[in-house]
Length: 389
Length: 84
Image (cartoon, rainbow over all chains, first blue to last red):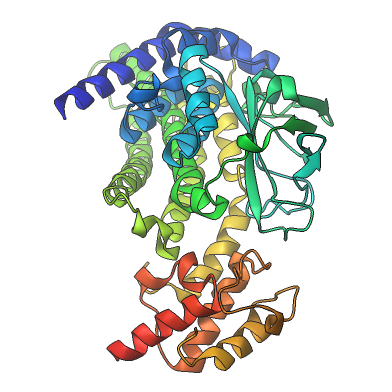
């Protein structure tokens, strides 16, 4: 037990240092130029962080979900784009590691550890209205293997990934809800850009639309049923890791507010600092966000105590982690806005040490990453049937 | 084997599951989700079953596997009826 705790602590410390020494240094340039955070991702690779979730037996670090979430928070404090790329990659690794079947995927995880391969995800599709639980493009037989061609409205860091994890209809005869997950290598993939990525925030995630064409072997289709993967891992873990990144962004904005207030207090010792009063209100908002993010993580960890994970299969669990996503994504920009008002014009300036423009712009992406309106409409149905919410 | 609730379950599915196929063409063990029942439709099926059988599914039963086939639905209905 203590070995795990030590490994976790070492991991989080290491990621925090990468955040401070590398990600933070390039964060403004990444944002300004809407470019991939090469330096931070290289540092994560060098630290072996891309295989942190791979089990020790397969060459990874086997860190806990809690440590992974904390690492996402630490990166979120310094560079939202790096943090979100880190989080999305870890979700793909966790999906494979937690639903591991078959020699192909076992040896693939060994490669992730040895080569520090970066995995992008291709889950959204033009025409599904943002519903990840449906796919239009099918897996089709192709020569001695299989192929797919999918219209993806956004693929984060797709052009920078070593591998892509793509949802598709299981076969041309399958219904849209009968999905498979396919892991295909970049060299098996053609990415034809269908748009640009000049956005107001999360600019370094480089997430334009693509037509994705891939050829792959049967072994590269994850054997585990997609519905199980989605309920037990993909959706709840995405919401947990994303929320920790957003909490990091909000906490960073808050810290800038605090630095501003402290500087004001030092200038006039003893004089009242009206901004401190407003900042105290923002602190309440941040505290509420932190409470929801941390309690959701605790629930998820508890739901994983039983190896069969029966609690994660329930609709109540879907509601629980949807609520996390809704609350955290709405609260993060609220905190950033609050800080903007506490600081005033110095927070509105891009070249000020108290600027929170980047944090605010990045935090606004949260409500669109799986649109909150779509989640509300799912929850509206579940509310009718769930008993304890 | 749907524990004798077969025809009532099929009626609920026909009215609420929005299956692209006729429910009569499906066997008791056919996967309803693979047959095209969406998560959204499955919630309506759950509500209609509660109404038709005058029962309430506890949260622990509200999961995909409980509703994935006619026989799975029959099994949870008979479990609830036995407990009542």
